[in-house]
Length: 217
Image 1 (tube, rainbow, N blue to C red):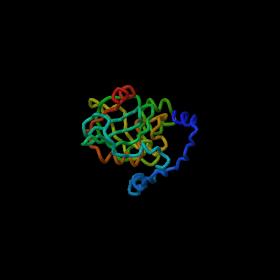
Image 2 (cartoon, helix red, strand yellow):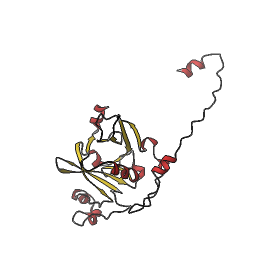
Image 3 (cartoon, helix red, strand yellow):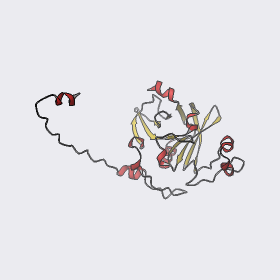
Image 4 (cartoon, rainbow, N blue to C red):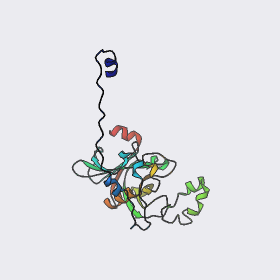
């Protein structure tokens, strides 16, 4: 509208002087997403510059309304929150697969594992026979950099039953903020290590489906 009005005036428009944006200190992200050589399987650095900045790990005002000490997975916006005192929350970017949309509700982190084995469900093996070597019957896939569960996994139970829903690491940093073909809630390996260290067994978790997110915000 402003452009249209000015175009109809005879008064010349002064040339705007470009304002250089303030430089951003990226050293914190270089440390946050740098290599972790002391891990059981040394982790390489993540090229965080290629990831949308809003998916970086950061403390934000808590939008969930949940009390401190609760994990909230916002599947619609690809965020995971860990709530804190004073109305704050640590927010992480996540990627989601089909399984990431299949379960919603309240549960608890029953247990967590460092460098877990991956055992795809029999239903997945039936769809993808090439996964047979990693089936439950065959003991799953050994932990390591190529393991789909990454550096850490948090196992979600509801009413003392395994939901088969996981929060886990992933080497596929390019899937953060996106919905991909398989997996539950995937995080950058450096971020899932951070989350793992912040929560204990029994931590409550709320997973919001798309409809619940729309109602909550």
